[in-house]
Length: 351
Image 1 (cartoon, rainbow, N blue to C red):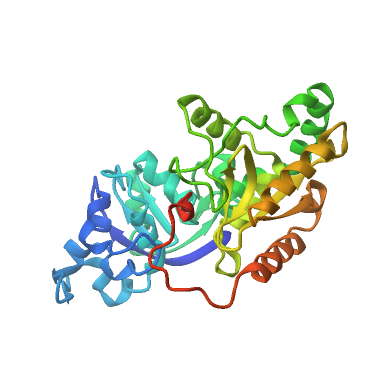
Image 2: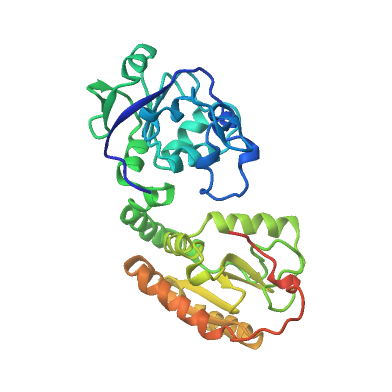
């Protein structure tokens, strides 16, 4: 996200209470699940006499020449009420609104603003009225608008000021997390062992083996255990997933993917590539033999395994990602026969 530090803009007045998300961006204007292509539909019921032909209503504030480029919007109480659609914030942001000043906000809308780089400022009705139509300067560090103080939680302020999403915010504490894990690993080493071979991880269908031998039948117990494994990912695994879920080089990856008796840390079905993030425990006891048997099983089923040290993920994520992409590309054939739809084994976690 783009960090929010200071902003100076004319304040466009939309002084109405209970401005709901269906007015901010009507459902008929949401033609995709992406964050773009929404600005034209912003406030469509008020902005246009005819939304289909985009015939503008000259009386609407954002159609007035002095407010067309406004980056600050002022409104009344309970702004952003109604449905929880995040598209409302996306539409405001794409249009160019970076700050909304209101008497109060719907809680979900407020949180959506913070997570998308748009600053929600709560001020009294009197101060909102005083600022409308003026040029205002918002200073997030000082928490002031034209000298008037506003409150904001520390976490929300940090996310906006530094341009962080929720994962980035967590990773600010990676040193403390790693230190805790080192202590905990010494106390409870069994927690960090590979899951028993009889367990199956994530998969959307009983047939889903990711191109490997058919997995063992699922039960409620294994499904619940698979969910636990995803929630128990280590810091290096979470960091790598943060990158792989972006589909580098257009490649799709899955996490905690079932392959018969095993669970693969990450799997690229197109390249039939397994990526394992190995901590120190993999060099202890009989783990090397177990890992060797696992890799041999996958090899027999045309799945290549690459193993990456956990500490390398923490130190050099860029190189790790490049290595994974190169390994995947090397296994993708140049031509694919047109055999019709992909087999069930290609069905799995959607990112």
